[in-house]
Each structure stands twice: as structure tokens, then as C-alpha cells.
Length: 270
Image (cartoon, rainbow, N blue to C red; front, side, top):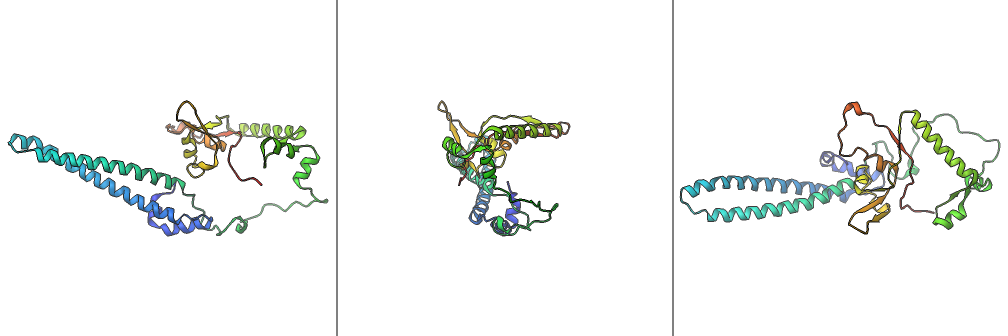
């Protein structure tokens, strides 16, 4: 989540940086500033009314003792109580929209990012030299089909466009790469985690993926109650919440995890 202070101090800079990523959030930034002001006004108004409520309530015993009529005071107290309740309800509504809007803002890019799409990206440095072949390289699809590593046609038959099926040595190579991946990370001191594939909403929010990408995941409704689970979109959506809402001591750190999971996401396929 972006710092509201940065947005308030220089909203035009924030808008310009987001436009450099080809994301137009001008209206959203303006709305966030409106909601922030509404929050502050409602909180200040409520605190003022509560202070007056406390002051008046302290006067009631004194006025009763003096034999004065306290009915007008009780009427005023009732009006204050109703106004405070209305403010609290408005504040909950404003804060809910404010939180969603703030969480939906993309991260800001580095100032040196060139505006536009990835076609405008420029390498900062090169490592080594481009590999030169003494033959004409084949396309990876042709290689996989020719060697019987992947069956694209039957992958589409099973799951639709954009899917494939590893076969024979292709399936064994995939499994071997996974084992290599696991062994290498364990050797580097990481703990292997196999998380649930259905997650609570808070997992996506903690990982910074919700609400921005909430429409790109698959949802599973529990028919026996109102709970909604989300199919795990990436492993980090689970790993980022392993210690959510827990306090770790410095001696407990670092926590180094890695995982291998399917990634269930609704993405365009070609």
C-alpha cells in the first residue's frame, strides 16, 4: 500500500509515475484524497461531539442536586448520541472505500522508467555475449512436438486453449527439474512448504494481490455457509500469510520458504 503522506504531498507526481506504467489512476488518486479528507472530518466531528457529551453528562448530577430541569439536557444527549452513531456509520462506509482504493493502487515505478509499454524498456547492462549457433535453431514448439515431450493438441482437448500436456521424457524432465529446484533450495537453507490450494481472502490481501487482481482468480463458494475461498493464484499468496498476525522475535528470523504449486488464474490465452 502506498503511503498516504506521499500521495497528499505530491499527488501529481504519483499520477505521472503511474501513467508511466500505462495505468491511469488520476481519478482514483483524486478520490483517495477526497476520502482521506472525509475520514479526517468525520473523526474530528465525532471526537468533538463525544467531548461535548462527556462534558454535559458530568453536569447532570450537579444540576439535579441544584433542582434544575435536566430534561433539555437529556434531549441534547440523545441528539448527540444519534449524531455520533450516524457519524460512526458514515466513517465505516468511507473507510471501507478508502481501504479498497488504497489497496488497489499499483506500486510506483522507479523514476528512470521510460513511459509506455515493455517495448520501451532499455537494458541497463549486459552479461556475457549472445550465444551463437552453427545451425538454425528450431522453435521450441517444434522441438517439443518432434521429440514427443509435449502434446499440445490433447492438452487443448482436455482443458481448452492455452493448455498442454507433458508426455514421456517431457513429463520426466519436468519432474527432474522440480527435484533439482527442491534440492537446490533446501541446500541453501530454505524450508519446503506445500500450502493449501484454497485460500481465504486475507491471503491475497496480505500478498498485495487483492483487491487489485481479485477478479482474475477462481472462487469457490461453500454451499453450507457464506464462506468464499479463492484458488491459489501463486505460491507467495500463501507463503506471505504463514505468519500473518503473529509476532516473531528477531531470533526467529530470517524465515526462508519456497514452494511448488499450481497457479490458478484467469488470464487471456492465445
